[in-house]
Image 1 (cartoon, rainbow, N blue to C red):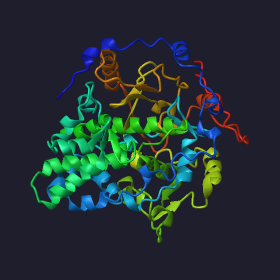
Image 2: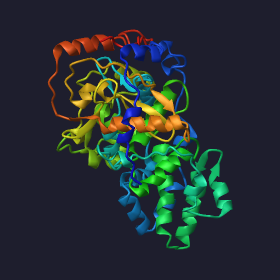
Image 3: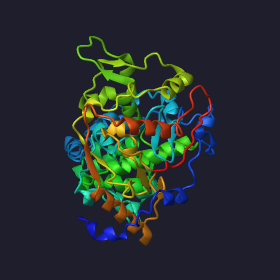
Image 4: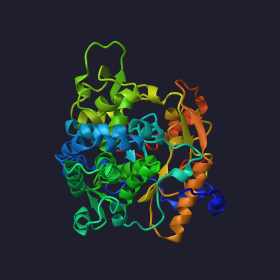
Length: 457
């Protein structure tokens, strides 16, 4: 169903400058001063050993039973890469120390990782390419997946089954359980039914649930189930996936659970600061053999015959030291798969971009990461006056206005092309480094001394 948002441009609240931004948000603090930030709790384990990242015994047997026609539907909907990752999910070995050390550098106000000389974040375009998801293009705002209405999970699952016992087993509270859905798929496949589209839609919920949206042990939320269901209608889900990952990075950074796509985060880390493609290398990189890049690296111009830049980094302390001393030259700002790609940026101050999803509107600040975006800076970007994460209340009139305003910003966003090299404005870079010193760890100090407040223009 097509949507037209231009008529709602007048609903956008006017931008009233950095003063309003400072008044809207409490002054940013040092990360060590942010209540509960994990940097101050080095003993806290945010992800290792938790069941939601353990092996999924029902996943591969279910996928091996899928009929070719149903697999064809999944490929048609842009889920080929997700399918491959699921099929090899039980082979993946997550390096929790590197993930934990990276999450410790996540700033919950800027939605970016803070390194000594630069900021970096997971770009929407990067995520879509890494996971093989249908890519959003400006002018396709009608195809961004979200809903402003209350979600009835049974109406989604009714396409799969109308048996009440099945529906009761598949849902509880505000969550949809993946195991009963996989059992239904297995039953249909063994009976050799011809419900190929229904099987494909059910399989999409399972494979996207495991890789993209897992929210608790073997379950996803109604909102994300609705996002997955929209894929078959040609909707773009990249923003919902990235917004969910951002929100869960913030949750983990503040000592909460990490439910986001650990696979997407490891793909991003692998491409930027762990592996480097090397032509004519005769041996495989053993470190990569159980990494997600081993299975989807081809589309990213990366093979297992690569050089591992972090082969000698072992243990949480070594990873902390490595990441907190990482320089711009050691971080691959523009991987080969991104070069020549057009990306979306905020048009100007006050027209901040926010990622749309069914759970929240999440602030998106690629302009803060200018080295990634090949943008030679002329000014140091100010913080948006929008909250970093705005929880949604579907079915609410104000929520609908907020969503329509956010879409209008995407309609008018600026565009930039990723270049292999980019000229820098020396004076602005010096100004940025000074501003970044207020956000980054002070060298030699084991505490996370991050002074975080909006930079005056």
